[in-house]
Amino acid sequence: MKTDDEFTEIRALTVLPAQREDIELHTADGLTLVGELATPVDGPARGTLIMMHPLPTHGGFMDSHVLRKASWRLPALADLAVLRFNTRGTSSPRGTSEGTFDDGVAERFDVLAAIEFAEFHDLPNRWLVGWSFGTDLALKYGADPSIAGAILLAPPLQKTTDEELAAWNDFGKPLIALIPEFDTFLRPEEARERFAIVPHAEVIAVSEAKHLWVGENHVCRVLNEIVARVCPGTGDLPTTWSGPYEMAENGTGENGDDQ
Image (cartoon, rainbow, N blue to C red; front, side, top):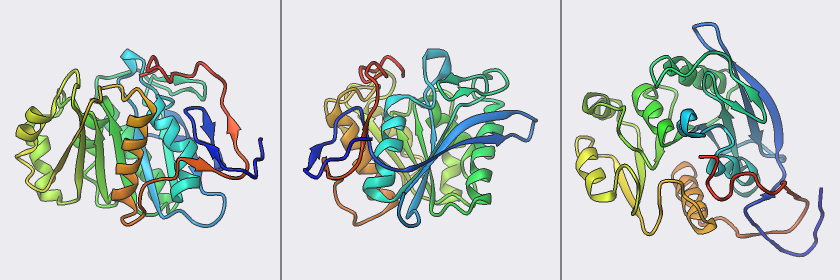
């Protein structure tokens, strides 16, 4: 743990203070999933992010860099709790979740297990945050009464049907989609057409970004947009920190290789 009385720039590998706990989720079909819960060191959380990672068959896991940086920064900078987990059959340094990848079908039980964990532990103001494959899980299975809303990072809308998307009209909770200008799968113009069936959905084009959100400027934009929805009025997150912190080891996917 480093201690610095001067303000230090927050970089890609900066790990700010949080209470970090290895957790297990238990699915209705009998599997144990591994995960982590990071909460603020001082005082209660103002909100909770239940984060769902990109496609595991293409390298996505709970440590995919945007999710990992949210857990490293947001408990300290925004008083948010961050819950990350590996979906069935997915491995990361935390461990391997039981079961096998089911292309977004049986993963329904994984999403429900994460929501139930957050509800059982009285984590407040619960929001789903999905990235890529994780957005399909959020859209297909996340319309739970205990959820305050969903934030979608680079949704491909490849596994989510129009009927499943339209169901968010009846659900009525906030739905925010961040769409990279140069996304591989779904770009802003097409995204506005697809999301038009959910009139209250907010589609935000992020200029110059790509599907992997590589680059500290894009990560900061994503985290600021998340915090603005979960804790309105907070303002942009600080880019410097004064106090104890750690630096993660290099080579942990900042270049997007772990997406």
